[in-house]
Length: 328
Ligand SMILES: [Zn+2]
Image 1 (cartoon, helix red, strand yellow):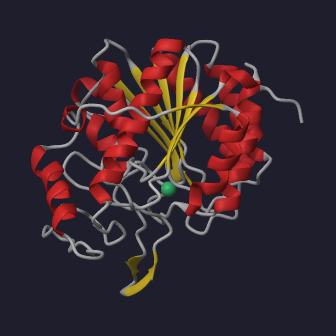
Image 2: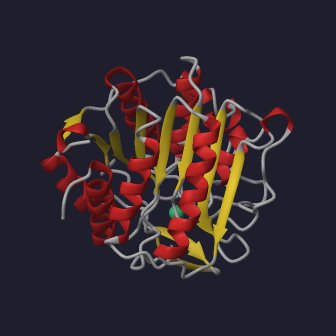
């Protein structure tokens, strides 16, 4: 692949700025802000051609999320004054206190979905990879619960959109955290393969899911693969896990690959706890490209987490250098 083969679709939702979350009973600064993706956005949009997000019907959101949850996000955003911290334990349909509702939450969540739907439909039409630099992220959002800074599950909605075109989809989730939402949505559905490499849930968020024995159910048994790794995992451990994930994807034989691209795996990320260095992302991008791009002609890379603005930039820059085969 060459430099001209990547397109960027971005929506940073700059008027959506959560300021706080509760951690261990105290208010702390919420790291899911526009600034986290600002540098990577500025760099990538200078280097590659951009496509503009289009508006899609909100019916697509309802193919993944139940109506009660969707209406809650919409209504609460319209009503809220300031910043509402959800009450967990079955009061609000949000499972943690890191996912506040602001006046701009619903619009931002819809626009992130639109950016990802625009990206996958561009890939579908042009057979060129697209990197969606959008927020809020989505992989923790379940059918009827939000959480982990996620409201609507962008990649799950995109996968449903692709299913409606008769395509088999694989999702490779390389965010530091397990995508409990994406797993939940496709757990009984063999038309989408979910493979995730993440920090061991015995130690890290979301704690209750991401274990190796979660393999899917019914006809979908074998279409969910979790590869939990210990905190501090470095490139050697990571590449071994990635090879295992790639083997699973190749044996599933998808028409379309979506990468849930979280850069909170970087050693300097304040939230994730792996030890990947900036240059390691070059090998990760190049391995994905060498093994999967031959077989799968349609690939979309979607930003999930990543909370250190400079580390996000160097991780993404190196990943796409490797992915596109740019010489160092
Ligand atoms: Zn994450």
